[in-house]
Length: 330
Ligand code: ASP
Image (cartoon, rainbow, N blue to C red; front, side, top):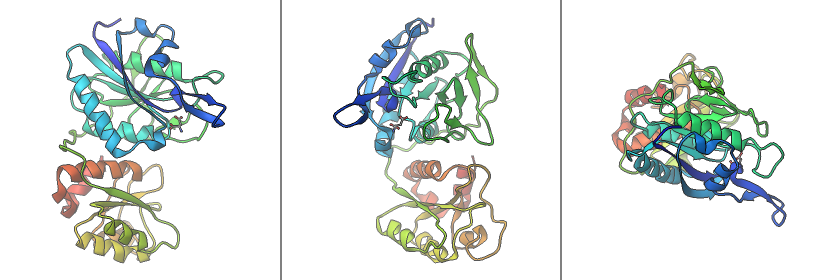
């Protein structure tokens, strides 16, 4: 048992839901305190404090709510009597909120995010074990200095690598190609690799809108023009394979970049970098010639959040493609 507190910040998600006959489905029903009360042995790990930040399903999460969550967590971590924070969340967008928080996280204190695939009232819910593992991780020396960790199914993942891979299976969270950071064993937290953690981003507020456009076979430039007309400061295009896209999108990229909008190309494959290895129309070489930046390995959803934070901090990045490519590489 450690002396300092672990704060349980509850945001909602299936972990806090129960079946509701009136709506015919799972709905938010439990507070963070209710969840903790259902976990035997939890209070023997650390003194706990509870913050009911929200009680929403995670498809309702927005970058603005993530920003407010970051501010709340930063305040909690600044307290001498707090050793770490856990965040309970829905699984649908867990990887996004975790990544967003990690990009902004400074200092050694752990933040551990967790969730559940089964509701609190279902047979064999996974929430109680996930909460216990998250609190044990946040209270451990092993997790110090690792930033935000995603704790699901007794496994610890780096937010940059992890993704929900199955819509229903409790073992849904995987880190394709890189693997987990470690795991929660019955006697201790086992860390097997340290995630690369570039210096945290530090905008004063979240001001830049960035949208994602998924390339389709047959895509044209219409959605790019629409995003620019909506006032986006950045556009993330999710391309195919190495990042290649249909050629009719490229003139839209050229005009968007000329208008001062950052255009970043990502790939829909779960692993591997975007790279300008082809020379055909619509290739990454062609999109780069029109001004697009290559988005490295991260998913479009994560590249979008990183770009929102980076452009909010330094709007001039939109005109510095080399800096954007360095930023998005890790
Ligand atoms: N739809 C739910 C949510 O993300 C799924 C879950 O939590 O597992 O809020």
